Length: 208
Image 1 (cartoon, rainbow, N blue to C red):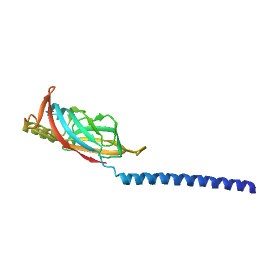
Image 2 (cartoon, rainbow, N blue to C red; image 1 turned 45 degrees about the vertical axis):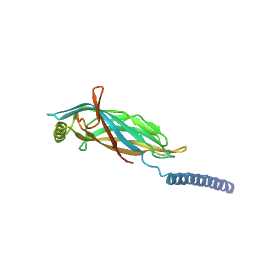
Image 3 (cartoon, rainbow, N blue to C red; image 1 turned 90 degrees about the horizontal axis):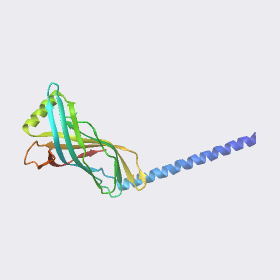
């Protein structure tokens, strides 16, 4: 009986030592990651809405429906010198007065290396999308007046990469003001394949 208790106590001590060693190892690794993270201080990526090509824009009433078709050029820059960025599950869409007016368009996932710039050229569109009647009236009035303010938004997930270490994913929210001056010859527009292309070069707000 004494031998059995001694053996059992010995096993417990070994298990405790293994557990304590594992916890200490994980603590050291976590501390090293935190210190590295604090030293590097990664900055948020920078997004620019470069241009928008308008193919269709039509508002109908009774019911109030909106049909749109834009092709956007969006650039993102990684300002960090030692931190890479993985972009996962990015969706771009347009809103008007806080109401979504297009479908979600999925951007391809990719990895952005240090100081690298990526370009996306997604089509953002909606066919007979229901909008609030007051927004329909405002859209018709804006179109009649020759310009519309809307927001291009990108939502998704990002991961940071430092050396061989990749963090968990974080939500990213990008908001780009887009001023579309319908047919204004002074607005830097060009005609491309039947579409009207507007040069915007708008800086976007980025939050994580």
